[in-house]
Image (cartoon, rainbow, N blue to C red; front, top):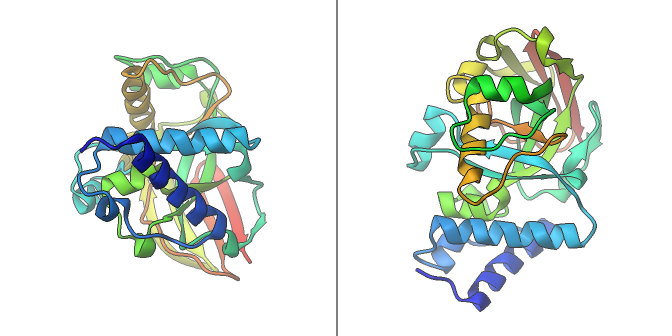
Length: 262
């Protein structure tokens, strides 16, 4: 379908209000049958522009659906992406209110900090590593403003790829980091290990997801900027979290990062 300007504005408003009130809405894909991927990204961009106008700053990007299992589950054959804003960031060990989210989950990821721009097409894993200043253990807080997480790919894309928060640990210079595909992580909730994974889960190598993003953005004439952060995708499953839970991701050899939900 081709959304009218009014329909696009209404879709964006529904998601903005769902985020503001922490009350999910019905899937856009059911409210607007035939909504396509390009239109979903347009809704995402419009809502990011609203947040920037309200004082937030774009500090990077996030890539989702990078594991084979998630792509199969959602019936897609490539990842999607969203924006990272400064008002989404929490310090390592922070206490975060669950009431600000609809139904939050957490994903352990390796966060990239870029030293140089990445401009597609034809960006490779080697190009990404050469442009990276440092990496850090991270937890992405993902939250669907769509009721019961009943999302299609267009719902997820319009909803900023479900990205809602970021907690970063200590940065390690890229020159001191071993093969990121071999990095291991244990996800621990209230002292109990609930999932484990490795960098290979992320398109075979976390930097491959960053390269995919740079090449995809090039289609619209956009580049990844120096100083921006990139989350390349989850290394494990993404468990739901509730108030009073402490979540820690222990990365070997990058260290750990944690957050407590209150």
